Structures are given as C-alpha cells and as structure tokens.
Length: 145
Image 1: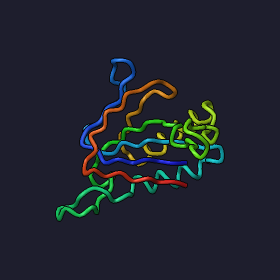
Image 2: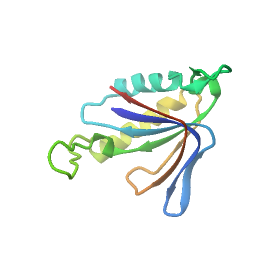
Image 3: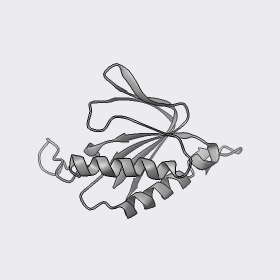
C-alpha cells in the first residue's frame, strides 16, 4: 500500500464538470493498493497518516497532525502509484490490485480514517478525475507499507 500525502490549503476533485469532493484545509491523499495489501496495512498506514506531524505549530515548526488542526482529508484512489517503468517507456500496472478488490480496500481505508472523526471527501473510484490541489508548503510525504 502506498500513500502520497500533500498538505493542502484547499483542493477538489471533479468528474466531468461536477465537483464530487472538496476540502478547505487538510490533506490530499493519493492511495494505491497492491496484491499483498491487507486490512492490517490499512490500519497501520491510517494511524501513521492521522498522526503525521506536518502542520505548523505556533512557532512555525511542523509539529501538529491533522487531528490537532482539525482538518479534512481528500482521498483519491490512484492505481498508477504502482506503475512499473523498469522496462521501456510504457508503464505496467501489473503490480496494482485488481479493481474490485482495490475498490473494497479503498472503502475500508476511508472508513478507517472516519473512525478518527476526520471528515473525508473522495473522488469516484475507477473514473477519469481532475484533481485540483493547492499544496501548502509545498509539503509532500510518501508513506508505504
């Protein structure tokens, strides 16, 4: 399982011309699953994500988590995080979890975040989306398990 985490001032995701998810302040999380991922991986990475201290405290030191600042999360499924580019120039996605399983895992991931009382907005699984991210900092962290 792989997460690309970006601190955000405001972000949104659209399908067609319709905004389907939007946050004003918090984190944008791009989420990818591979074949070996389990619910234990989800629980581990969600705990790491919600406690990740990447928001500034009163001294402008990254010392606060999404829990501390009471932000929201925009969660976007992204199978391309498991692109393999070792051979040639066309990525292979053989390492990505199959869509039906990945959709289930993605739902579990978002439900696990909600257990921490963090508002979660999402895109629409397996659709062409446009994600507008205002990366604050910029701060981008990659979490893997």
